[in-house]
Image (cartoon, rainbow, N blue to C red; front, side, top):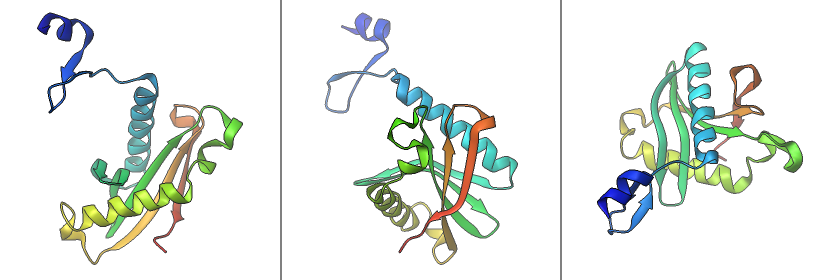
Length: 143
């Protein structure tokens, strides 16, 4: 069994099940998009302070600091515009998940930033390269 795990890249989950630890193609592309977005934001003066924050019912891709403002960033990659492209994929449900994760993070790891101004940005990519990045500052609000 251990040889099979090593050969396939599999690992054991906390409850003992064998799971495939290799990322899917979509996960690898998502990671690349987040890396490109983080570099783009850093080149524009933002400082990355957290990545892939997840809580029950919520998630946020990047958390940055823009001077004294905490910026929660949703990164969207859509290589096919058939369903409206990257911007259209940020639904009301997605906004709620980002907001939930932001609130959760601010009460835990990010509690030193409680009371600071917050902003919700989006970084959109229609191809996984830096030439196709659109950064929407204040893409949505907490209200």
